[in-house]
Length: 362
Ligand code: F6P
Image 1 (cartoon, helix red, strand yellow):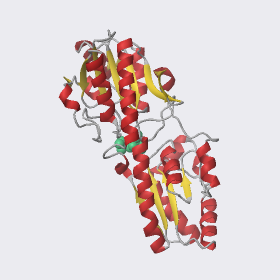
Image 2: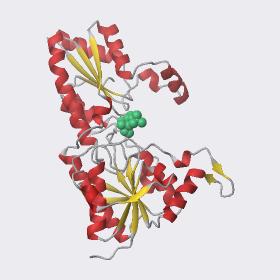
Image 3: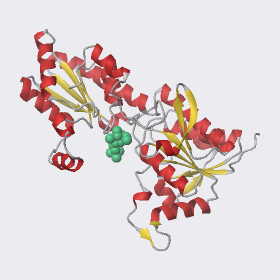
Image 4: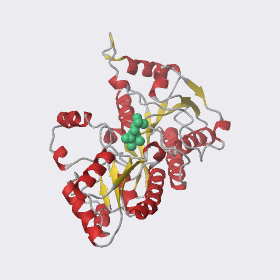
């Protein structure tokens, strides 16, 4: 057995669940235990489990049959310890952070492996600055983590969203309607853009490209004139109008407080008002995150997990596992923290969408 610089590690999953988390846990733990002889402690419910000291030593039997299972066997939460409002006197840090450091010490951890999205890896980077050894893994259906080409969970959500769009085609054509389908993605439009291209969407609205209803209406009316009797409109949940894009953040948030339904409903209403074409809305919601991961996510998560185990053995801490140009590498957590990977203006998929006749709302 190769020697390992890590004897005991903790592992947690944090933020919204994503398909592939269990495959990643299995990859880290199996390789850590079997290849490098590392003891692996599972922390329950994300960073909250570290604050409350809820953990268990993981046993090899726990990983049988979990590759194909959605969710996370460790549980998750959206706990943000550095945003804890309770400040402990004496050391001048949020109580939650102090408690995490205490649990890390009590459990005798040499390193903490955190599986999550932007918030999780940012917290991981801040904990590393506090002196903890941390390794991150990029998980999210949004695919919006900096420094990695792709995150696990994205391809499963993409498959679900594409299937949703495919299914809407038959009902849209039967009724000659506009079908609006809202997909996840608050800050980044990867899921909307990719599922829209895969499903042959006629209009795709993503947060990176503020929309003008006049452009959408003109496109839909032209389709109708060309004899196309129905249209499919994909709306990312973070889509916004050109007017909204000009607003200060505070004013924008305030204006959205009055919106009782999600953005897909507003877009459908605006389309009906501008074109007179009957429109319906489907919000895919959590279906995109649930259920069994597709093979791509299982494979990617397994590769990321086993790479993390090798980094544990080498003492290669303070990094997030990433895919760069088809190579699995470690990137400094510092470079990931606080950043969001949005769709860049010149991205080839935007050109692809436009070239197949899709309106991007601008
Ligand atoms: O971060 C993943 C994600 O699914 C986003 O696409 C979505 O906006 C958000 O989580 C939903 O968050 P919650 O699970 O807290 O409702």
